[in-house]
Length: 386
Image (cartoon, rainbow, N blue to C red; front, side, top):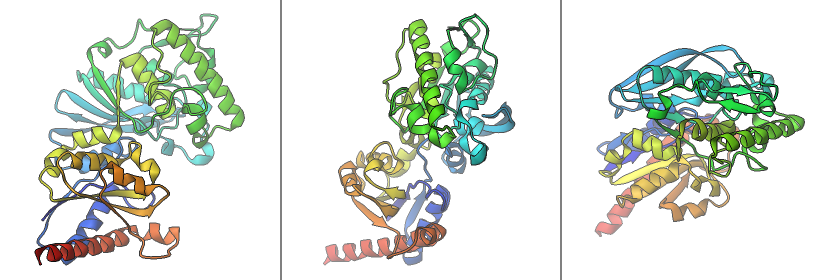
């Protein structure tokens, strides 16, 4: 039997790689002669580089580091990956991630995406013309204004004063006009793709500011101010670029970075798990599998909206491969995942157990559940043979 384990992290408990190893150990404990391929996955946002670094299937990979300006002006070393001379993979969270700043010090109106622009500027200077950007986990709500500045875009207020670098979310309200004359010349000749696992618009109650601003340290008054700024920013950009991205799914991703990428680089936004599976060459493993095991910390009705397990299941379905999903918990509406090519689901919790205990012992629970799973499969095989 050939089994592919393609599983996401159990956040707060174990990484995707640790989850893969735990499941593999449980399978082998009962059935040591099966063939197992481990494929740690992520949804394309924070942790993208970690997943790619763990993959033996990624050829020609080089890890690079660069000193950039962090979300609050601090100097940080951000990592990115190059694949040969033609492709680079950049993770937004490396340059302006939420986790780079302690929770008590987060202040969304003061955060800037400038560091991400510095990374992209460096990649373009290296001659690379195909750039993949992992969105997610950002500290910023600046609509990508800092990112654009680092690439050469200039923003002016109504008195024709240049807005200084690095601009932040609170500067959005000041924007009166923009000048693209100094935009990095290689942008127009480059291909940009961004992984995006949310469908939020840029503006409104379901937009970047109101949905994600609170976790980035914005209080109610600041949310209102940031939204006013984002509305102004959107109005100016739509007028000058003749391109209204507001309602494009994902425009509100990463504090409006989705919209900025479409405005300034003509980037294509793609589901994160789709991009990850493509980069990992997962198809080559799954098409030869007898069974695919996937999962993440919690499966519920929201899991069908761009989450990693359903992305894996959809790819497996293309080759008519059965899929079993493991999760810490099966939440409300998880049964809808049966309509999304997941054939069976198992909770790893053996009975009533506290959240603290389940998170602390996730690897052991995954291993034990995997053993129970393979034992059950073997019973089915014996019944079929009778």
